[in-house]
Length: 159
Image 1 (cartoon, helix red, strand yellow):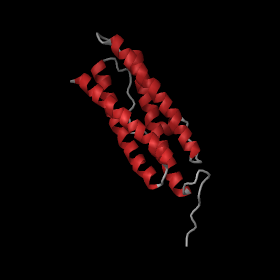
Image 2 (cartoon, helix red, strand yellow):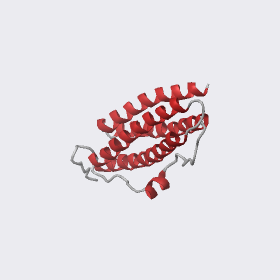
Image 3 (tube, helix red, strand yellow):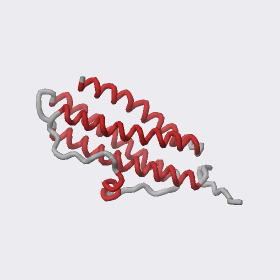
Image 4 (spheres, one colour):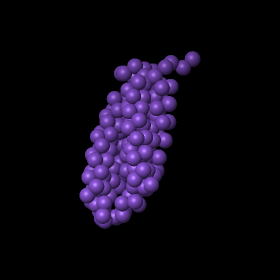
């Protein structure tokens, strides 16, 4: 019979390790999304410049907060967050975008990134429930709820 090991926050170690791997994958996608959004903020041009410049700053600021929260959750689970760009580029499904200056293109790429991010968060939400990890579950639930509304708003911008 296999002995179940419990980590310092009362979760099964194997399940916590699996959640941390999923969170590191999510972290990689967030990092690429963050850098893309910084690029949109810096490089946007055109008639909606002021509106989009501010919206992109708002988004990348929020992404940066979430990046820190995800990394800290990995640490809370007893694991080490990935922290190199090579790790992020290797794992990320969010594509790297260069020199995007057109608002509609940036918004479409943001929606593509959210589709990937939200999908990954749904998997983590289910895995966290299975592991009885309320901390990760609550984090993912909050992110999903907030980001679904952003998706609606950004999609409305595109018409």
